[in-house]
Length: 187
Length: 318
Image 1 (cartoon, rainbow over the protein chains, first blue to last red):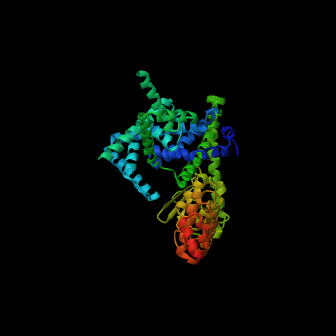
Image 2: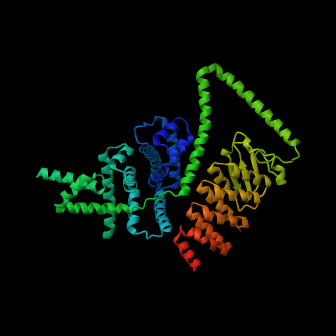
Image 3: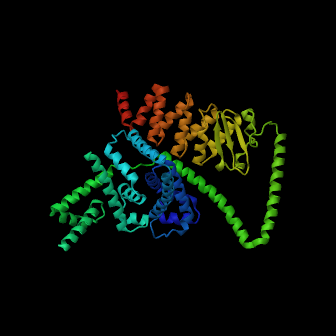
């Protein structure tokens, strides 16, 4: 088994096989990240492709002393962010889009029902819907912390922000979700 | 008072870190000891744990194997084509930098000569082909329809190595399948799925291609294969391909309609040997529709992957 550093060095020299092994060691996590941030399979697939093409083109600029994983994550998050911004522009122009968004949210819930056969309770729907409403930064932090279990130090590095800001985003996101859940429970 | 306040604030920060696994072990124990003594901080800690549990309900999506394989296929296709075009750009840049303006004119002449050679070569190749005892060339220019001819007669005339299969585009409109090879050659094979030219070309792709994306793209247009040779190629893909998405697609095509003895036997092999437990279960379910006794004998091979089939296997033993 070749070390990550050796694979990177070989890939930089043009060894396609090493590049492929390198990509396959992390791309599932990257695709999961994109699926959860963009909430659209096609967009996630496009962003996946764009991310790894950027990785391929810029591999020679990668600093071998830093974490390859974090570097690729950062590229993915930034790529998804441009897609997210484009999507937001379109959404703000058409009210119709909001309706579709809500529908797609319900579809996600329904699909989940079908796949796991679990009871997809109301609270869970509210939580997912609230996560959907979070800002891009908050959503990214919540995903990286809650799903990936990353340390805030790593999250800060991925998102190019400081640790305090990452914690603040996360804390605010949790407060928003919590508020909505408790409000609904009271009703 | 202020000191106490700010101390509590910093303990709250530590509680946050404690709940979200940010503290080293020693520091975590220290924080727990600190907050245990303080009712307010203890309830703050409990509340924060509850908040964390909320996020456990977030139901994040996970990419399934098929989506991932599809994404990988597209990516490596794209990288291969970018690499190809990148080389051309590098070459022209090097030449341009080295010889500047004067050489561009020479390049233009060279391009004209190259096009002339290419065109005359194509013309003579076409002439040569008409001298062969075959009336219809399998590679025809766009919009030309191929008439079905005897399968065997084409076997030795097609040379797919001449074309870049990584760019092949396979589409289907109604009954008609179109295989368009790389844009530079502008070669198209067009006809019904049973047309020997189409069968032969599809068969070649299924047998010779290593690129999973091309195989997936090709199988997308296939109905149940009526040609024995193509069917055998698909069986081989279903049983031996490295890529799980490709194996699954071959399985889907082969089991679209009524299944033959050969397919039945290959399903048995799949059930015995495939690494994809879901595919094994699907294969067994298909087999149950056609040959109950064969399916019964295969149940034990699936039972380790599925509770339902484990149960069926036990019932079989009884």
